[in-house]
Length: 539
Image: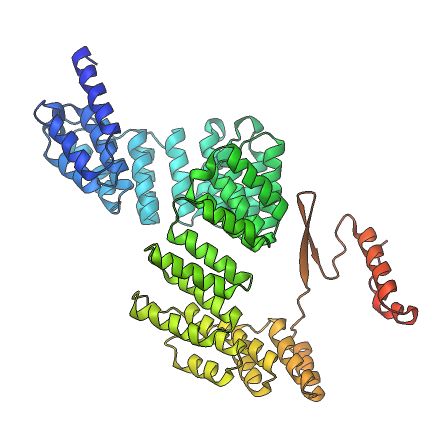
């Protein structure tokens, strides 16, 4: 690059780094035009890239279409614009621009294919992606590592993971970290964590990076496998790989699910040591973890120390207070949120109605349900009706709850009928419970918990024949009672248990302790039946 042009490029680059608003971009453009800098492809590409990063893809597109430099464009300039469109709200423009490359007497390069495939992922158009794949083969770029990575990502994102795996398996000699991560991430996003884990274990240790670990941890957390998420996160520490913000978020989510308070506190300290606390999302995750792990005071402390509180921050804190049965405190928090002029969303009202339900605040629940529509213009979803039905049911207003089920503009789902069944169990309303179970049998025919609740209602009312008949129906239809489960955190490790499970490594000692507890709680004559099955171990 010529010295004078290099000077101008450096000056414009510095100017663009200072841009943070549309007005700044316009001023930078105004600086470039009279100096004829818009004639220079390299400078124009830098300008377009900055516009894209600020979400001003339309402005970038207009400049690209009208600037003199585009009469003699380079593939670099085209690629910059394709990338900008691929990340914009209109990714189809990236495809159109990619298709016009040859009209400009240019030849696409590996970056052209990589960027346009990002647009295909946004569009989720498998057939279009396959056409671009064919184009890459015809132009000799299909074997390029960057293009292969983009193709694996595209195929797996479009639900065709078998094609992605075929490309991955065929790319034995060009597998870099990005390609391995694309394959692991592809399986993880589709929920196939066993395949993702298998690829991860095959990946050479020398090229594993934080993205490889994070894809696996986040995948486990998102597919409701928190124990595995935490196990991988801890293994990550053993192998001296520092987690990034996404890995920490996923691990905190898993801790919240399992109630792993000690590990959550360790992660909190890690966040403080590495300066991650500036991220609002991490503070929100910490509030959620502490609340779900039983330490509501620490959750409040994190909330108070969070300077930039978003609607998610407030909602998470309200939900945490509701979870702990602190209904009044949750409603006070909502009032503070209103005073802070933070507009609630539909999830906020789920938390509020849940708080009213836990506190059996029927009148307040009705009032919040109404202002959700009248004051905030939020149309109630089925989950809001479910909260109201739960509120009425818990408070003993069973007929009103049943009437609301009939009136709501949705078909009742299992959660709503289950809420009615649970309320019928609490208040001994056998007829309503039977009615709710009839609907649940159609929606969840193999859920043993529903039958157990109605059986409890019959038992409480002394209707033993009906209770026995219900259990006979369960046997005849093949409905088996699901075993209960629990988890406990010991030395930063979460142990999970299922009723009757003998697979734990300390199984013999655990059952031995249970036997001693039974011996202390019951006379010796009653021990045999209670512990007969307990002490039957496989040879």
